Image 1 (tube, rainbow, N blue to C red):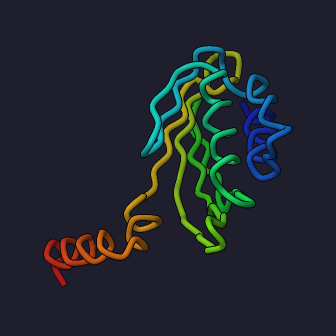
Image 2 (cartoon, one colour; image 1 turned 45 degrees about the horizontal axis):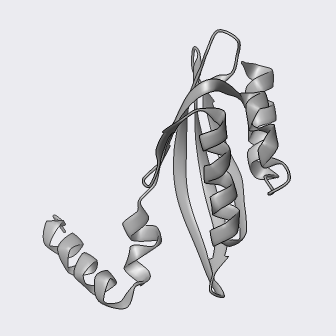
Image 3 (cartoon, rainbow, N blue to C red; image 1 turned 90 degrees about the vertical axis):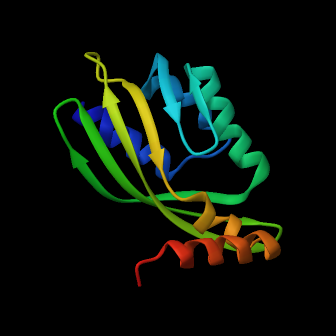
Length: 139
C-alpha cells in the first residue's frame, strides 16, 4: 500500500488530461468513487470525472497537505485550486481511501463543502446560504 499511496499522491499533484489514463495503475477495476457531485464505480467512470474536471475548469491543481495512513486505508488532506471564467478559487478537502489486498484503491470518498467553495459566490444563492448558515450558527 505504501508504494501505491506515494505514487497516487504524486499522480494527484501532477494530474493532467494526458495522465488521467494512468488511473488504472492506482484504482481497482471496480473501485468506488464518491464526491459531492458524483457516485460511480469503475476506472472508466473515474477517468471521466477527472477529464470532466479539466474540461470545466481552468488550471485545476491538487496539493496534498497531509497523509494519515491506517491499516488498509489512508486519509489525504488537500487544497484544490482552479479558475472558472477568470475567477480564482481555492478550497480545502479530504479524501478517505481504502485499499484492496493488491494495494489498489477500492474506495475513494471526497469530503468538501460545495456551498462554501462554489455556491456562496453565486449572488442570490450565496445570500440565501449565508442567511441559512447564520441562522444555524451557535455564535
